[in-house]
Amino acid sequence: MADIQAFRGLRFDLSKVGSLSDVVAPPYDVISVQDCAELYEKNEFNVVRLILNRGDKLLPDQTVYERAAEHLKNWKNDGILRPDGVGAIYVYHQTFNVDGIEYTRRGFIARVRIEPFGQGSIYPHEKTHSKVKEDRYRLMEACNSNLSPIFGIYSDQEGSPQSMLDLAIEDRTPLTAIDKDGVRHDLWMVTDANAIAAAAQSMGANSIYIADGHHRYETATSIRDFRREREDLEPDHPVDYTMIMCVGMDDPGLVVLPTHRLFRGVRPMTSAKLIDKLNGAFDCEVVGTGVGLAGECWDAVQVEGDQSTLAFYCREDDAWVLARIRLEGVEMMEGLAEKKSECWQSLGVAILHELVMTHLLSGGELPSPRYVHGIEEVVSLLQSGDGNERDATGQQGTGDYFELACLVMPATVADVKSISESGERMPAKSTYFYPKLLSGLVINPLD
Image 1 (spheres, one colour):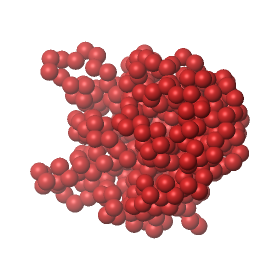
Image 2 (cartoon, rainbow, N blue to C red):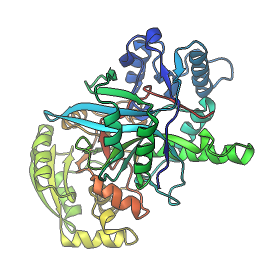
Image 3 (tube, one colour):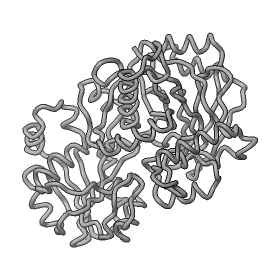
């Protein structure tokens, strides 16, 4: 049972910082070097100085984590960040457009009791990386706060907690921020004890599936364990909880975008050579030549609606190949991932990485690919090549052209639930829940 609670969040005093839009930021893992510089320039109190401090004006032997903690301490002392007077649950709506259609995703931010994965009602769905967890651990330890909300989804039910909380904010004016993509972020503070209790009781029947923020959740678990081993803390100490944005699985604004792959370190190959390597597992056809055919290929994949249909680009002869898995390919996948569930084996990203890249192409250990969500960006990067700097996911660019790319369908919300409950993890970047949650709307102190 998910245990949610109200908390006294730290929030920016807008009389001192100006517009909320100027002090919030996307999550750290999608902030590029250029984005970071722009956020630094936008406002001297932008939360990027906490979540992704770039190390300006470090004192001797001071780390970026200690510098972030110094900012946080100073901002609290100067009243830039103020604790809310009473505990609250924070209703959070995001209004955005995808392909000309407007959506509103509704959720709420609460403190949620930490449960180790596999031992309670909170489930992961993607693999994590130890280097990233170390980075987030050092930041959370230094700041003693949850600086950004984790994104969790739960099964909707009649009388859902979201409906109860939305009722409590009817006819109330939200705090609003607009991000650089034009997404509107609205935040309301719910302090009514009856509404909070009703939402908590309703939520108690649900499990939470981590949609985004696995590294931060595992870090919060490690911080709790470390402190409980070394300190005599009272029961229900704030360190026993972490800040999660909860969204119902049936919410009409729960949009999952694809994450296409532009591969680094792959040897050049023509479309004919690719087809030869895939031939035993896929039916393949050459769609045509020119990077501009990416949109047409993606339309074809979407129309089929099957995750096992993949679209590849080969730079060697500037050609696009549509690959549809055959029965032999399904059987190969079953053999390669015999310990995985049928749902996992049928994921487009699993087929791509396990069957195609590792087995059929014998890719071996490759650098992390460039992850791209929009077709226009796919075309642009195939034309321009990789940058030399770190991209928005923290991967180091090579400065070379991408020899191979793949357009792949995203995993669905139902896939997330099924694979999480089976105790499995999807390949990294299997889902991209759009839009990202903003950092800086509310901070959860751990003291």
